Image (cartoon, rainbow, N blue to C red):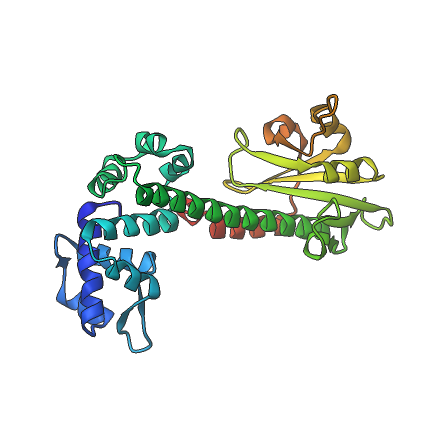
Length: 302
């Protein structure tokens, strides 16, 4: 998708949709190539970046964002807008480097992407509009990542609810839905048929065990210390799902110490330090794990 030819051809495609009424079928039947690019790629890019939509009668129409791209006027400026949308929607692996600065991003880019950036002058200048472009894209990527992290976290919480239900015969309370200041996410019981409550803090990661990490707030840790029964459920969701169950006692040696007037509020921990704490996942819950993996990581599913 990061091709100067495809992006410039899609500009002409957006002008075509803006200027005349044409259906998706008519476009596909009329063009195998459009300008210098494969017509199918041009249409796919425009739909993926939400520049065009398809009406009930099949007619292609510019979205509000598509109109904004067309109205920019200058082809180079249009290209900047296209790149901004494509990065946010496509989220290529090298886009993570954008938050580190454009020099770092450039080092990680494949040649076609680098050519797109050079074509519209995004590497050379410090003009306000160029700086604003980089800041805007960085903010869009951060927003995307925050949204994705929330989805991973919710998936992990739901899996704990399902697994606790399967293992202990009664559905726990999903506390995180009711309040995010309780210091735990799920309220279960210590064993099947038992009355003693078990508070569970749930973390989910989209990374492999060697890179996976989680953050713990002081409120969560103090809740753990003041609870008779408390566990941390660490879910790995990217490949084959794994569940690590960690007690407060096991986590305690990793907790930072307050120093002088300094007081920690949030601390970072690594899944690999608790790899020996892998717990069983109920067979019925394995199917749910696979469903979440397909939803969250569609590109990894064969």
